[in-house]
Length: 368
Ligand code: SAH
Ligand code: SF4
View 1 (spheres, protein in one colour):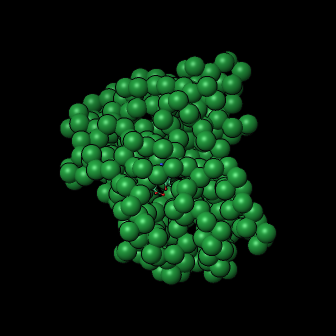
View 2: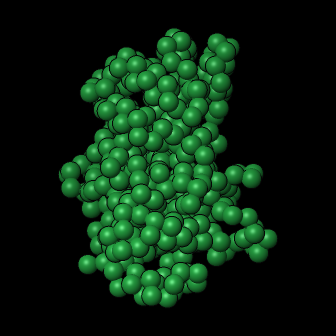
């Protein structure tokens, strides 16, 4: 069987090269061809000896996930559906904004955690993505963007300047595959992104936060969505296992090694559910215990849940309470309208193995 070189971070690639009797610097050369130049075949690697290219062609391959859908919204947001196997496809989204280009990357086919408002959670879970399938989303996106970019833009290195592990899945439940992918994003011989430009978003899986801190600290976003356990237990069920007071401690441990001195608290604005003044005041209290910035996300409607998006006035008033307490607050612009590419609308095509898909969350369930 051939090995997929997209599965290897720098160290693993060096080990593989050693196993076929090749020097580490050759591994670094090939790493640059794959990740910096988007090479998909060994014969294009012109400064690699012909014999080595022939050897690699027999024992290895560069196999990214296959694009089966490609849509662009009016605002320039582009969404790909990528097929990872016969039963599953996941989504990757590119969001251009000024000089930045943020790629929203998936980590699992589906998600086991079943947050009340999330399309991914509602469709169930099939499996973790491999390292090749995770880093392959960057590879695929860069090559697809360059293929359609004007010539001038091609002079710049990569249109992907920032990465968020915010697509399908919970990245901290598949760290064995996510960490090598993150290392490739940071490696100067691969993607060369700074730790501050790579964000892992989590619903709050504490053992994963501690492991990420020790092995590959990057910027952290916590999907908080509620200021107290009673409400968070309903909206983000994993809170029953990892409650807010423990999360606060884990965030503070994380910040000891994080590239930024705050955690971004993601907060989806659900009308009448978590958007009242008293909730904002509880958040102000919570922010005294951990350095936080708040990102208010207008809820993106999904067919499987009966929530409504808080109105712009309510979001402004809610943000106002946080700001007056001295906190930094951003309100996320909704991007990718019309192609269901906004946060939480990503679903892909996942063969559910949890028998959860089809279930609808009702408002009475939450308020009960
Ligand atoms: N599992 C991880 C990362 C993927 S979800 C996590 O939960 O953080 C990416 C972000 O989208 C999270 O902040 C999530 O809470 C948010 N989200 C999910 N469903 C949403 C919806 N319908 N509208 C707006 N944001 C949503
Ligand atoms: Fe999973 Fe994140 Fe969606 Fe929750 S919000 S179901 S953790 S993908």
